[in-house]
View 1 (tube, chains in turn brown, purple):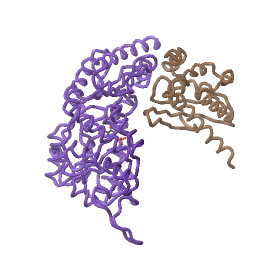
View 2 (spheres, chains in turn cyan, brown):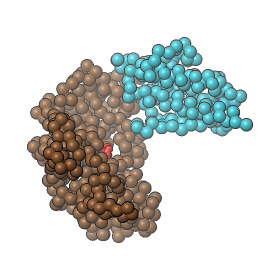
View 3 (cartoon, helix red, strand yellow):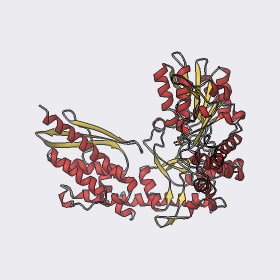
View 4 (tube, helix red, strand yellow):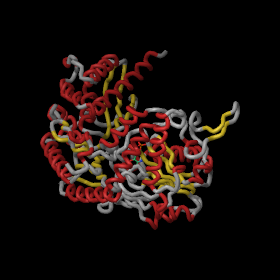
Length: 148
Length: 406
Ligand SMILES: Cc1ncc(COP(=O)(O)O)c(C=O)c1O
């Protein structure tokens, strides 16, 4: 378990040049989450149309792992259906628990770089924060679509 | 390793391939074998409920449980063991004062005065009291270096101030607050002072009669004792006038179908089977600290704090929060451009344990205009070599992030 397994170059790249950092004007599902043990905060926005996530953005304060993970997540979910996104959340959280998952299933190769976080138990919550927000946002929109 | 470190078995280990340097004692301290063995002996030789059985083990357990209370009384120089209530910790002790002392006595027009630097445990209970009673919650103004200007603080205390609650030592800034002077100012206006001693009682001589504080709360686990046990000290006449918070076994005198009466102090506040092993361990911790001497502990703490501040200031791009001088062994800092989590992870890989986050002080983090910080805190088992390791680790952190962040 070395630091380089945690702080992979792709992760640092997303941390320094976050993708989709910002705010959407309107018509977006917004989920604000924080990690009460450390004070990290994230706000994830998604525009969902016809069961498809057209766009996702985030704003937040946090460490390299949480911000890089948010950046990757917002890239990965673009164009996915709500169900596909929820499947991705499941895949990601299993990877964080140290399970062997088929990383080819990730629509974005970079995500695989977060695998090393599983070896740093104190940091898993940093990595999963944005994905929890995705789960909540996508789940809520699903409920809305189902209801008459 | 210094001479005290040898008493703490946990410290002799390797973490991530390096000798452990434990710098998170303000979250919880380590325990010497004297405490661990006292708890073990209790469970192995005289585990029994207290204040009940007439049998021999029951008497031994009761003697140990009450004997520890006398040790705590002596440590803080309370007048009587009736003023020493065992609780689960500082949080529970402060909540007892909030719900049993403040709630029934405060109302609209009254003010509660606290500091923005308070731990959530000494902040949220007062928010709740304000909500329930209509009293106003007010804050002292901190100076830029995280200290209190005594003259300004005295002016903030007025005839509406019914209660001042403040930590004697801040768990983030390391500031020592002038509680003795504040106590006098509050008393002159007819109010009471509640002192959060979570970070002071473990590290310095605290004399409740000298401070003339009305209540003092602290936790065993931060003073070389077990988790799950703490103390509420209260002046006898105040505790006597207060209603119990928990009702049930152990705390009663006489029970009828519709009415009951309570035991005398301090037992009316100790409903249910108490944490006997915890009290035994706390007693052993007090013995241990007194053997070292609280003045020696405090001197060691201040010396390490001064050394740490001096050494850490040599690290370029490192900001230290709180006063430069006259502070206890808690040093909170940030390295420019590196999130405190990342700092803590790199240090952990070096075997150095520090804390990162908001340290249960979200309003203080906002006052400091940071989202989170890293914190190194010391106790008697730390020495200058530990701080040298920390500074090396910090240099390494900077180098590492300097490299990966290019
Ligand atoms: C200043 C201060 N007050 C209160 C507490 C709460 O103590 P406990 O968690 O033991 O109840 C702590 C420690 O976390 C503290 O540092």
